Image 1 (cartoon, rainbow, N blue to C red):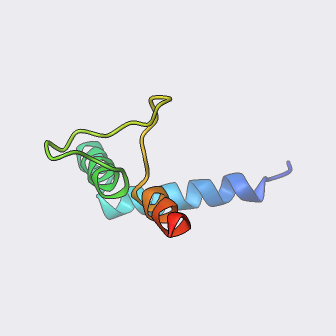
Image 2: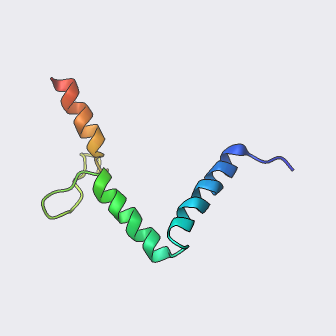
Length: 70
């Protein structure tokens, strides 16, 4: 049977990530929420700021737009 190397890589990464949290789903979800808070633009209340289409805005995208304007 043929094995897809991309799928194998995804499974490997997922396994490593889950092992970091001892396969505790609550800890995994908390980590995802922390990552979202770090990566996406939020207001002073911690709520996500959305673009005109309703999508979340990456902080890195905002920094990139500021560099382009200069």
